[in-house]
Image (cartoon, rainbow, N blue to C red):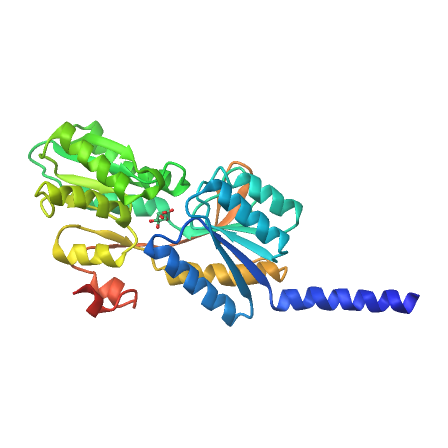
Length: 331
Ligand code: BGC
């Protein structure tokens, strides 16, 4: 009897060891519609594979109910660790509770999950992204009169969208208060959809007229929507437009002159860091972090990767030199 028990224990320990050596990672994504998330996924999987882990990927198509279900299904498949890009930072709190109950560690990737006991938060410096956007526009606005700008923020359900706005505010608010800049229209683009950004830009032109100096837009997808509206009015290239992500279409627009800048986030750094952290966490280690961020429930150990402001002057020496897009694709 004792021998049988001991053997069972050895078998159990071996199974646990095997799972730690070759962990299974559950990756729950909000969406794969934007170019960047496909790249995040591919880099993450490739790095995890190098480290001996396997990854089960789910994508929720911007649907909270579906993402909660995705995470619950990953929990029932007994993954060793969860990596989540929440569609809605508040709606995922419930799913994290289920993971906590199942003793599965959770890493928030790129976007924070609010009021939840997550183990790590790995992201870019999102406030710096906003500062780069606001700063780029501010430096190029007319100085001899009050500049007129439109602001298109991201999805109100994404905590990052608020951080991008906060960064933009850091630069723009003093200018607005001093009367040097006037915000003629502003709105949030639901689900970061380009068509929603286009509608906001159309509304801005209807309300404020064609006399607009800059449109501070929070990412490249929505910048594309705003630029479409500007194109239809014959204003594309005449109004400064900001973005983020260095999407291929945005880099092409920068070279063509219809978009002024983007913020390049070296995704391979973040995605491979996340794969390494996920594997270490699954192996019971405590990866080192460089910061903490309060998500309402705890000070979450975090890492903020750096970002680079890009326009036509440095596109080749940054995005292309880094292998993010081949030069030939930009023609
Ligand atoms: C990400 C951006 C992305 C946006 C829309 C944000 O949370 O940080 O890189 O463009 O979501 O997907």
